[in-house]
Length: 76
Image (cartoon, rainbow, N blue to C red; front, side):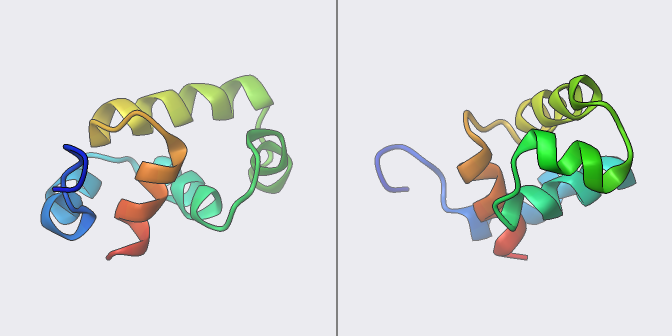
């Protein structure tokens, strides 16, 4: 762990299993660098709905940022 952050490849897979299919889709767009507003347009939801999913993704993956979540996704 660097700076107390667990390596993404160590914690990734079991944590990703916690996400719904919609949350996995949104996480994929996060990993591509899209903003929540852009993701809302892409998936046909409101920005508020995407904001909720992002907060749930962070909670379920036990990370503090979208960058950390994207690192876990990208390591798979």
